[in-house]
Image (cartoon, rainbow, N blue to C red; front, side, top):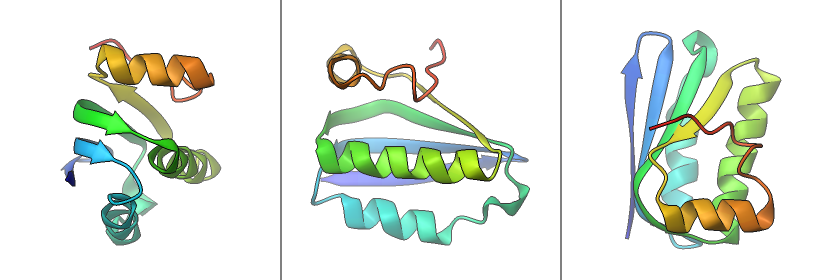
Length: 103
């Protein structure tokens, strides 16, 4: 099961991931994205503390959102990533692309 929530803090947005972001969770992810008004947002942090698994479709969703944010000059980064998820990011070479921040 995959849950996603947001915390809006002025012009900063935190997106919290909980569970497994795989093909079955992509619909929830994309639904939430369609509901977010990015016009007043300057930065987005992906909080991956409770993300337990991610597959290629989940990675694709995160990269797609990162590209959308970049096109709108919104800074994005991720935090609280587990060792297992960090290893996946490292293996496919995206750990620096997503702008990690220290937890």
